[in-house]
Image (tube, rainbow over all chains, first blue to last red; front, side, top):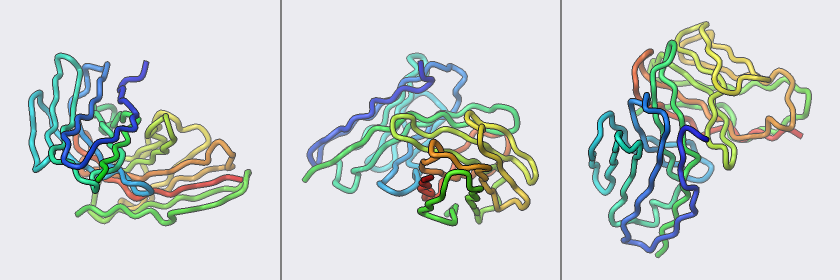
Length: 113
Length: 114
């Protein structure tokens, strides 16, 4: 079983829809949770990060963490064609000399006009 | 903004060649990382470094080595390239050693081994 599970999609939604992207994890030692967006042929770009359970909002994006259920979500409101990308969840814990990130495999999102 | 620059976007090499991938960051970050990204497998950590001349193995170090002679530069070396090393290679950096924090990525090098 992978430490982090993420539905690969593809997920196709109409413009303006609310999108929900999700990851589950098995390691309760994860302390820090991130979402990255990756456009085709580009590197991952950090969208949001949070330590604690609960919601964190940034513009059209909301990150939600439920540590008791080992579940994180990213919500995108009023989705736009420019949101079409692969979304990666990532989780961090301190080990040895540094922090290691464990990534989900990514969910491919397409927002259609 | 943090800038992580990888020297090549696309690279084609032959089996058995020694291959060097270069990465430079401009924000005085302590930590640097090398990942490979493959469809269905996601990002997997090859090596990381939290200081000059220091290195730690990641999850898949076999067939790779690294070099960090200067703080801003982290090189990945494929000692004898093989076809199963065809992949997208991503370099990343983060600010401080020993703290939970996001990593910032370059745009990747798509490496093909023929």
